[in-house]
Amino acid sequence: MSRQDILDTTVEGSVERTLFEQIELERLPQHIAIIMDGNGRWAKGRNLPRVEGHRAGIKSVREAVETCARLDVPVLTLYAFSVENWKRPRTEVDVLMKLLKQYLRLELSTLMKNNIRFRVLGRTPELPADVVEELEAGMERTRDNHGLLFNIALNYGGRTEIVDACQSIVNEAVANEKPVVVDEALFASHLYTAGIADPDLLIRTSGELRVSNFLLWQIAYAELWVTETLWPDFRKRELFRAIIDYQKRDRRYGGIAATRSTA
Ligand code: IPE
Ligand code: IPE
Ligand code: MG
Image 1: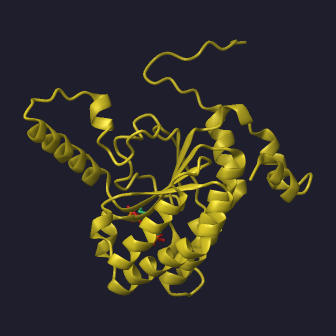
Image 2: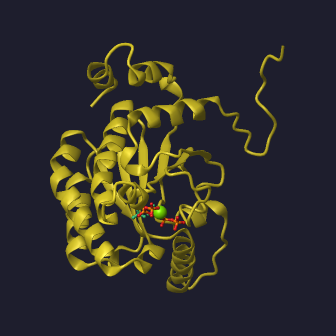
Image 3: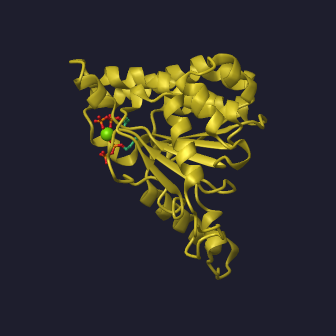
């Protein structure tokens, strides 16, 4: 997959092409994280059961992954299931797990073909055994790919991740029988995202202005972008808009504004 594919698959003068042309390709976010929200509302608006929203959302997942791979964005992280989502009705959770398995099975060849590496962030051992099996097969098959890193946050909680990191630091110190001095770098190396750059851009669909326990440590300085669009309606034009907005932001990290000519 390449940027040329974007030109080949968009018509000159179309919304997508015009937006694509506005992106500065040498200043892309290095990690995009997305809170995929609004599947239930999408279905409700069509008088359909909630699970139909989840089913429709798969197309958006495919498009987000494909577009990031084509753009050469190094990392994409999608929030698919939170530790709090177990509170939902059993039937809905079951369908979500089934869809996930189906997605992985159907998409694996596409991931391979496009050199995409797949990883899971979250407490995977607590997931159903058949899902774990599919996830492990996906990670194993794609582990030597070196194109887009596609993380899926599954049974994920930001606080859970921080607690797990603390536990892992304690365990290591006990095993080594040595006190440990914790600093930010050491702490980050015990998170699920060890070795992965923090998200530059955090997108949330369906309008909610909250982070819902997603990547709490890693989003310290992420640029936030929220759209009213419901996840099943999210297409590459929205992703392009988010990137264009991101490129207009002045990221100060607590410092002062970069020098700009002021008229
Ligand atoms: C996001 O859509 C998918 C998951 C959280 C699994 P929702 O199911 O949260 O849809 P809304 O927010 O209720 O519309
Ligand atoms: C966030 O959406 C979790 C995922 C997208 C997996 P939720 O629908 O669970 O979040 P809240 O309940 O609106 O905060
Ligand atoms: Mg929701």
